Structures are given as C-alpha cells and as structure tokens.
Length: 149
Image (cartoon, rainbow, N blue to C red; front, side):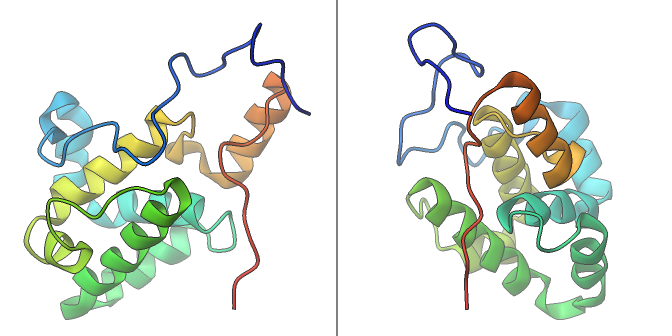
C-alpha cells in the first residue's frame, strides 16, 4: 500500500515532524468548527479520541465518557492530548496538557482536531472511514495503531 512520494502527495505540504501545524489560539481560523466545539465539546473530543486510539474506542463511547466525567473532563482531555502529542512527537507548549484542558479546553480541542485534519486525517468520518479513504487513495496511514498495555 506504499505510495511513491515523488509522484503522489495526498495531503499537500507535509507537516514538519515535531511541530504543531496551528497555534493554540488559532481556533477562530475555522469559526464554524470553533463554535461547534464551543457548544458540543464532547462530540469534538469523541472524534479526536477515536482517531488517537486507532479505532479501539468509538467516538460515541468517548463522547459519553467525556460528558459523564463531570469535574474531571480536563484530565480525560489532557490524556488524549498527550497521546496525540506522542503520535506526532509534538511539543507540550505553551502550557502543560492538564492546564490547557482545564483552562482552555475549547482552544485545545480545536487545535487537536485541526492537527489531525492538517495531517491528512478527518476525525469527522471516524477511524474506519479514514482507513477506507487511505485504501482508496493507495496511501499508508499517517498513524498506525499500536498495542498498548
């Protein structure tokens, strides 16, 4: 399923490894998604979690857990931000993951969602939808799920 990088670049300019493709406060670059995340952060979180976990948790299950986690949403969100950073070797800046999800979860979720989009992954279609898209395009997935304990 490998593609020839010299003739086919499915996602345009490839992001630099280890660098975020958007700033934390660039959430208003996409006002419709920012507003959606403002009113329904659980849905955006569920979409991100399904991708970051390689489809092992559904977006609906992650969304429900996020809604039900009441005072610990920031901790649950920070866990997935940390997983996303590890997947792409991203730095933890300008603040720690728990601080960002505790104080500015809308900005954090919007940045995480846009990061996946900018790396060729569409969180809105879920893990299986992305796998099918990559198969149709004949490209290797930008991320590969790993076994974890």
